[in-house]
Image: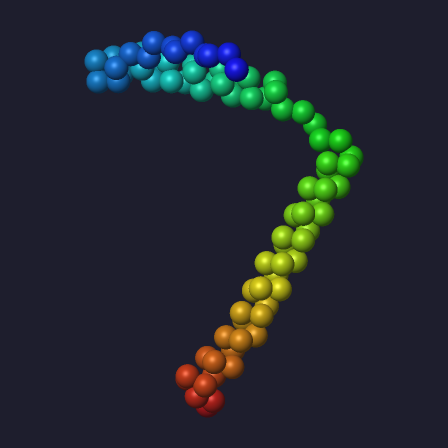
Length: 82
């Protein structure tokens, strides 16, 4: 892996504007490189991600449903039916 050159960022206390601009330039450069490396998923990868997301939504829904199902009778016992 190629070593990246360390950029010389000025001290924020001595030169606040230059330091802020240097950080913004570094962030924008890194963001640009990240976007250029990203690729669009193919159909197989998209289906895999969609299936994993669907399973996660269903699992979280069932967990919430069962917690609520258990919570209602316990809440009624504690508060008393009136």
